Image 1 (cartoon, one colour):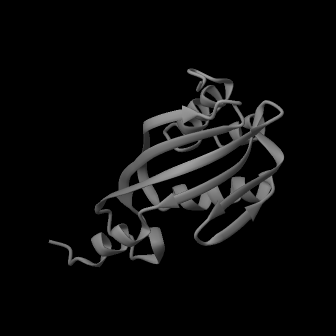
Image 2 (spheres, rainbow, N blue to C red):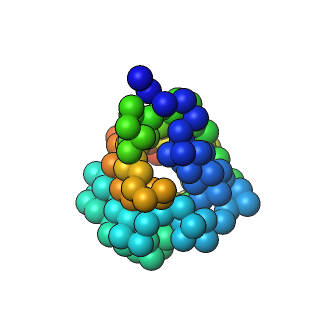
Image 3 (cartoon, rainbow, N blue to C red):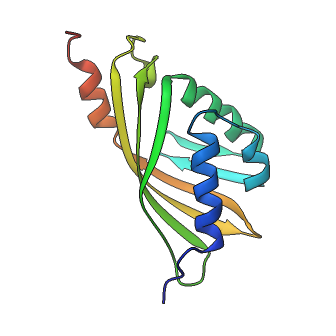
Length: 141
């Protein structure tokens, strides 16, 4: 039986609100993630809380007025995994190496999180980078 409103879901809800929404509070990473936190994404792995904090700072700097909305969230039966389907919106400031043209953008994805010792420990993420690259390749009107 899946847990509803698990501790992992509470952690992730706070994480989404603080790290990927305004007013952004990257220090929330220190409170919510383990020291040895790992982000695994299509670009490779970001290892360690400090490295992840820098990655998050860089990623979010490429999207003006960033907003992340969690569309679905659920936990595994033992509470060690949380899954979220999400969408990020904002305005392009150079995401995916594109010219910062301030066009509206949208990125969707799915993230699987490991919860260990009451904190977020590992995030495996897949995002719609191809779709976003196609969106950014269209001429500005």
